Length: 101
Image (cartoon, rainbow, N blue to C red; front, side, top):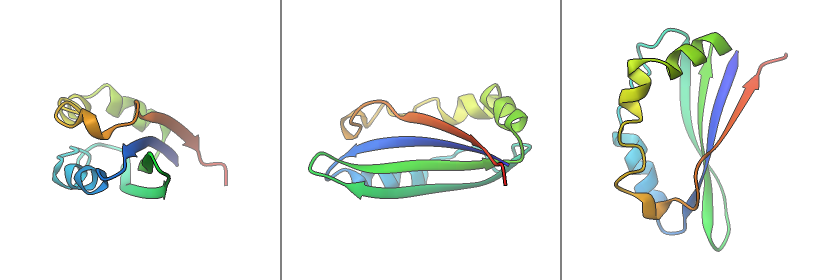
C-alpha cells in the first residue's frame, strides 16, 4: 500500500469553499489502475488557517507514479487553485508513505 497526502493551509473563513471545490471536482481517479480510495481530511485551526489533507491510497508506488504521468492526472489538475488562490496560505505540501505493516 502506498499513500500520497497533500497538506493544505486554508485561510480561516474559506473552509466551506475549499470543501465545496473538492466536492464538485472531477478527480478522474475512479478508473485509474491501482487507485484504492480518497479522503479529504480536515484538521486543526488556528487564527490564520485550517489544515486539510487530501489522502489517496494506491496499491503500489508504481501505480501512483503512473497516475502522475497520465492524462487523468493532467485533467484533474488543469485548473487546480486558479479560481480560488485567496483561500490558500501557501502551496500544498506533498507527503508520501509506504506501508510497512
